[in-house]
Length: 147
Image (tube, rainbow, N blue to C red; front, side, top):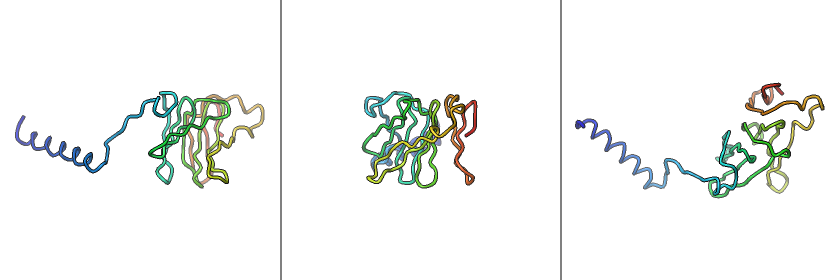
């Protein structure tokens, strides 16, 4: 190893150690046992206050930096997509359903289904893989339809 490479390596390592000394972790691992859900996570989104949401095989996980909270969709489907919309709504797409989490009058998040308002013949879709929040509205896309 030449002098330049050694100096570069020392600088990188000292920056990483310095960040950890200040309490800034580079990353943190959470096991499925710690967050209390399935080990497969399909989507991730962050709200305006820094709270993290994860689309999980078991539902929607919310992590505020200290506590994990689980929200199941009515059909119990795998949550494949998440996207933050206006008014702090966290939109979610799952198997054959989509909707959003909204705080009730007590500040508790509740699932609001949008797919329940579809006509009966519109319920033949599979996973909602993408959510597009636009100035013209929110669009949910599945292999069969765009809602």
